Length: 369
Image (cartoon, rainbow, N blue to C red; front, side):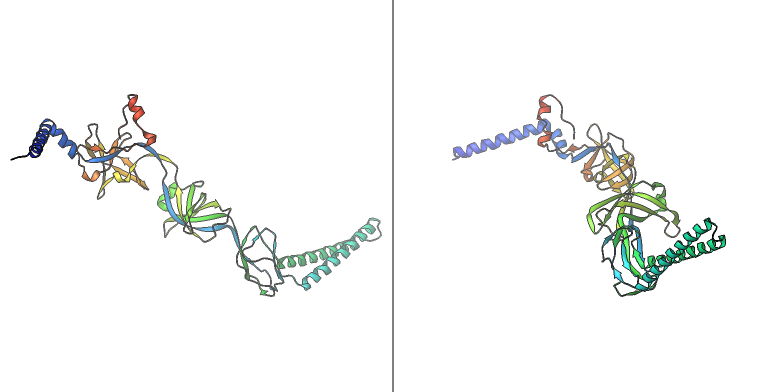
């Protein structure tokens, strides 16, 4: 004997089966089509600003650089700097002068002053016709000779007082008091690093895209978080016949002294901004050398159209030909598409700032994704 519970369960199962059968017979075609349409994401192609970059590697140089050396053979009397010091133009770095040169200068100065006094006295007497002109000329020659001798010794002493030729930073000190130096003996390097020069090679093919005044952006592996910006100041007058490249020089400020001469830097030579049609790189279908995208038609079907690509940057590719502004293309889901197939666009998750309730209440249709 069948219980009431079993009869109720059987009736419920029969009712569910009849309901499913009725629904399938009324709208079976549309349900199946919606279930099989691939879900994709789309975007509208619109012009956007694009800035091309020519990439290169460069080496930094100081704005001014010199090796401080001695001009005479002499013993170092005093060293007035230490390694790494910042110095001003004209500041005394090394003193090579000895007592012999100082005494010779005093003797020459005294001889000049005496000759000058005698000349003035003879000139006064000549004015009163008490001495002849020949005597006055002889005294004038003696005075000039004494002055030349004094200036000669002053120049010799100047060679023994080594000073900074410009403002800058000194390198490692290579002499000590008491050292014997000769002409050409290196004392220290002096670099002006307030401005850094950056030399880099650009292929001959890109020579027409380089001009004085262009912007550059440079990075160093030593400071990966910093970007240094500057401008192109000059181009070499010749193209290297071996490498087929031209050397370009750019300059940028270095007020904190972070960069030093001799560093390797990656360079981006920035081109003028232009308007292009750019699409997400994910939307591009690449088969061998052929590129294409899926364009969405008005009836939500897609057509695979060939395109010609141009420059690329992170996550985007320039479309030179094949698309027009306003075209809607598939971005994600291209691997399951073919021309003529109908698509279902994935819904965009609404955020509080993009709440569509006020627009719906006002009767404004929501924008298509």
